[in-house]
Amino acid sequence: MSKLSGMTERVANNFLAIYTAEQYRAFEGQGRAARGWDDALFQVTMLAAFHGGQSKFVKYYNGTFQDWGWEQHPGSFPEGHNNDGKPARQVPATMVDYWQFGPNTQSGIHKTRYDYELMGSVISEYEKTVKHNPNYDKVEQILGGNTQNLIASVSQYFTQNRAKGPETGALAQAMNGFLHDVNVDANDITQWALKNRAKKTPQLRGRAEDDSGKDQGGLDRLMEMP
Image (cartoon, rainbow, N blue to C red):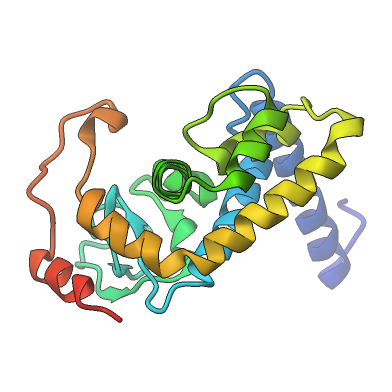
């Protein structure tokens, strides 16, 4: 490396840094409930089917179903306190919010695992208990058991190396149908979540939280969306 210079050294350094980081993520995921980078990306990618069907983008942000987040800066997630001491600015929610800066300057998609897994659980609950979606039942049957979050279960079926060759074709077909249904149902799911699952659920976070919520006027405004 010391014999390289200029852009050649930069490219080599970047490649080795990224390659080493991804190797670490892969090893880290093994034996830890597949809480790896590949699992996070897979889940959020599938959630795009839901968000792509929404008339107005609404997602979980720090446990609350809302249409805004804090502008991303080191330290801004989850409470909007930037590390430079300046308050973060509210901005409209987007898919990019699934990647965040934490208060310790660490960043990544793993910072929002609670939020995207909560989003997947709410979508799954609606499709299973309200819509009684047959594609949900097909996927669940292939996975071999009841699941509260079909999106996370499918992701971890693959990222935990549990996939079985003969059944992956049927699973892909059923999951494709399920995600299509989620896309079509996106606005109904959004309205249902705003009415039934909008508030934080501190018990899932394992620590006490203020359950008063933020931007309560915004909740009324969202309830009126078309």
